[in-house]
Image 1 (spheres, rainbow, N blue to C red):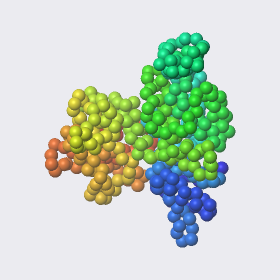
Image 2: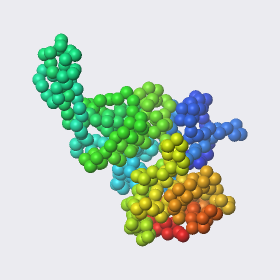
Image 3: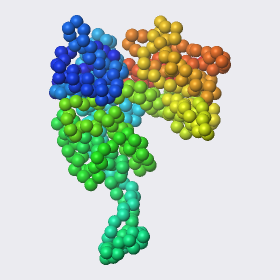
Image 4: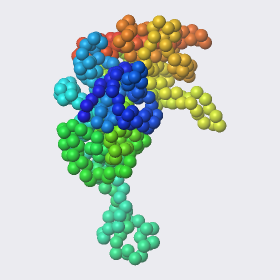
Length: 433
């Protein structure tokens, strides 16, 4: 299958057939997102990517969209830029808890020249097989059955209503089983990926997993809401990255139609989600280097988990819940809030190109949490070589400030020195006053 590689917000000429155009229009309607836009100018077709990354298949054509998080200059070969972007995206996903991957695996995956979807499929299948071999997640499930012997709890109310089956006991008992929601989600994803995988290695791995998961119930459908119902514990926490990756596969219903016509398929995800998860994971892993001394006693809450604040109340119910991306909490106080935005700033603009909606959102955070400092964090683009550091003082209270800053993530995150440099940059941003 031929693969065309685009980078986010890039436009590239492509000789599109009427059939492919029809499939692309169908995809746009299905996703309800401007993931990949066809552009017709001067008698020729081009494709324009947005901020979503991933893989789109239009018949025999595979289109890969990658973020511009490569380290090399724009003048380098597209092959090199694609390899660097893929490697860094994998590292970002690892920090965010979506995948398990080490540097030797990254090097091996890049040598296969697979597209982004095949890479994530391999990571999911390979690590799920390894974890299953260590021992599948199990828990006690209540089973209701009719047996020839008494086992567990005798359901007398059921038994008395069925005198014709007096020779069998209506019972309920607890069984320690692997047929639980977590594994049912994994089996559903495996079954759908079987239809979509093109790599021979992935096809083999997924086939092996189908055998291992044969005793797990295959659900007719699984959604992100089902993933949210899974409560991991100390014994099953090792499955957290795999569950997060399953969630990524299930986003926007990408796998729901996989058992039918696979001529049209999209696996895309929003870089806003990846960027937010990466920053949170990086700060936790490199806390000593990235977080200033005055913030070290704080706990770092993602999406304000725990204490929940709202903007209003109506008929006794709290409404308009506030969900800062990263909340530094010390007791009941919130000395700092950070919100990540995967957008490009415009340094020449007095407002830096910050949308009014984003700034009003930060204003609400500052006021409701009584927070003296709120930081809007953006990735530093290739077009903006100088870091942005700008303070906005709120008119209503001179003790509260909103800072806008850019962070250079176009680094080789596989190198220790580069990770330390990124931690040092975050330290400077978090120290702003």
